Amino acid sequence: MAVETPSSRKNQSRETEKERWDRNFADLLQELRVAQTGVQILFAFLLTLPFSSGFPQATNFQKDTYIVALISAAFATAMIISPVAFHRALFRQGRKPELVRYAHKMASGGLAFMLISMVSSVLLITDYVLNWKWAIPLTVITAGWFLTYWALLPFAHREWGEEEEGDEYDEGSPATSS
Image (cartoon, rainbow, N blue to C red; front, side):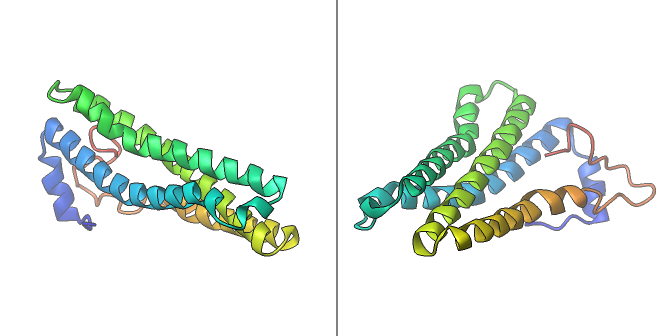
């Protein structure tokens, strides 16, 4: 991941609007590659779980939790991969701004469903291995951990890297926000 410096911001301020949309889309695709790998591994694990020898002994609560984890992983997978299908549909139509805005929304939604799936998976496994007295607090801690790193810290530090006085690069403009 490239570190943004004041000089790189000045170079970005000289980008055309088309170049900015292209860069934003490329940046977003890189982020989606990371998320896609994680959700695919989780989804694959969840797809194989019912075929394991211990699954028939799972309680109704554990099976319900499994369904929440599985369906949310499927939704996350669909949303994280959807920008590729959208790109195919809009290919060479000059609609990159629309594609970037759509891909941003799908990536955000996909991460939300991945959060649900991961937390549900933790609840399922901790309830199966331990018991609900341990499963609930461990799951709450896990959810808090994810929310801290995926939501609280990023939103709390949106002002990091503020432009230096006189820097023309406007990170908040629609053409440069990812």
